[in-house]
Image (cartoon, rainbow, N blue to C red; front, side, top):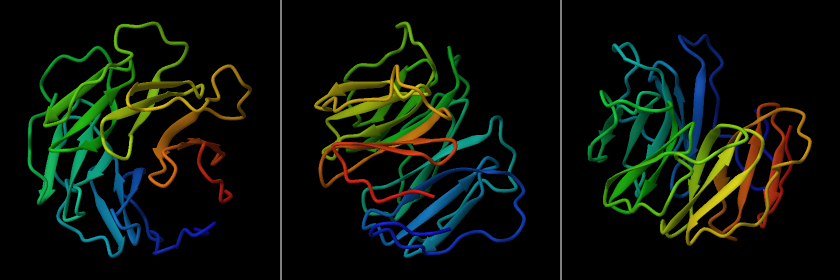
Length: 219
């Protein structure tokens, strides 16, 4: 794994995996990161601490995301059925596990005093102190929603579709999107930039698209 811009490579998995990696998230200070696999296994690098995982435990649905707490001393794992698993200082505020869903959950984000989850149809589910600012649930979409990101102060969020379409809610500003533009591969996720308030989109081939955020390069 190569580093670009100011990003530092703190390590990677070189051995065999029981299940594919589904997400990566940095520590709050950016000096480490966690990887999570579809079976709930967690791998910590840099100053990221390991607080436990669902690896080797029975799951009703695969894990698709990992959300760190504000101080990085814990994290939540999110499964596609909306199940949530809390580790370290992460508090369990509820989940969609066992509840009927119109579409599977594919990601989530930390919110002040809680967390959010987003489904493929754009539905948002808030728990704890997380505030609901709107969603694409029940609205027509050209392509399914594949991820979300919060604004730096948590008072808004973006949803991103696989065609690169962006939908902004709360105090999230729209800086542009790849919707309606040709893509070599579909978009699979996004991240917000706390320095500029902008965001990056990432495609399945590793392509990066920056909107009001610096571009540091990609493989």
